[in-house]
Length: 55
Image 1 (spheres, rainbow, N blue to C red):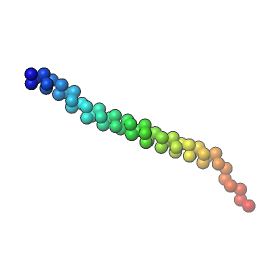
Image 2 (cartoon, rainbow, N blue to C red):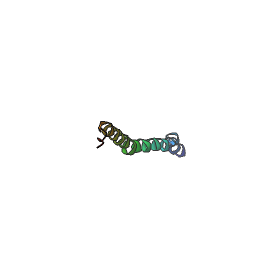
Image 3 (cartoon, one colour):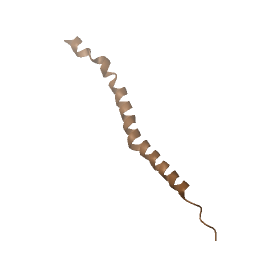
Image 4 (tube, rainbow, N blue to C red):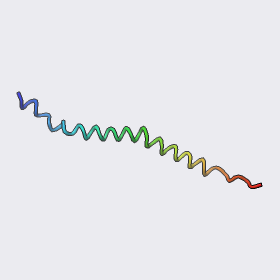
């Protein structure tokens, strides 16, 4: 009986690593990717602006 309960121990040690990878994946899609998109859009807008004429 005790051996049957202990047979899944190998997969249990893999779960924390999987959770950390999943957490980093969620952080990438929720924070890093939108920030890169905003930065790209800001750079595009700045490059499309012409310098102001001097009077």
